[in-house]
Amino acid sequence: MRLEGKIALISGGARGIGAATARLMAREGATVVIGDILQKDGLGTEAEISEAGGEALFVSLDVTSEADWNAAVSVTVTKYGKLDILVNNAGISSRTGVEETTVESWDQVMDINAKGVFLGTKAAIPEMRKAGGGSIINISSIYGIVGSGASSAYHAAKGAVRVFTKAAAIQYAKDGIRVNSVHPGFVDTPMTEAHHGIPSVRQARTSQTPLGRLGVSEDIAPGILYLASDQSSFVTGSELVIDGGMTSS
Ligand code: NAP
Image (cartoon, rainbow, N blue to C red):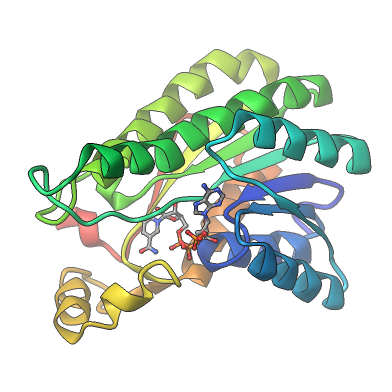
């Protein structure tokens, strides 16, 4: 029970890495608020956690909306009394190079993947300060650390999340609020299902991964749990890479 008594809000928690994190955190004793635009999947994850004996609540949240974030934090604090953990996980992929990326697509990816993290952090900090501290975990990517031939806006957004994390870590350390980033490698989730379903892509990504397989959401969730828990009480501004060795080569 590494999160006994803790209250966690997870954006994009309806499915994929966010849902695996919600299930794991609930098993470790946290009360989990799942924020997502996908109501059906979000309610499904909420029900799954409740049936397993955990405490979960789905809230409708578009991470690009400051009003939605304020409402999600307010519902959390009104119902459960405080907010200890925020996982800024919601994101979308984008696989176009610089010349093929439209301004509309660039703005959408930056809005959801980068501005969403800023808005979530901004909304959570006052409540965490009131609670005497907290832990914010921002889900970036290996593509926030290295480049690739296949994307542009996604790299820009994930790189922004990586360094925004360090700035927030410095600014709020005095309040006992830790802020860290997680950098998954190639992971099978609903987001990557179609892309990883192309045999040549799957083969290429597997061979780029020294451990010889693609990841699953349950490979990433324990890293997020560690950063959320008091076991990482001396860790802030750091980058946890969970990529099967991909960025080491
Ligand atoms: P996923 O399966 O698509 O789950 C992400 C969730 O976020 C979905 O439910 C998605 O809904 C939701 N979402 C999208 N836009 C949103 C918005 N504006 N407001 C609230 N929720 C929104 O993706 P995942 O693979 O688990 O990815 C989770 C995080 O890990 C993302 O930040 C992603 O960039 C990062 N990541 C993933 C991989 C990978 O290989 N899977 C690798 C590195 C980093 P929709 O399905 O409707 O979009």
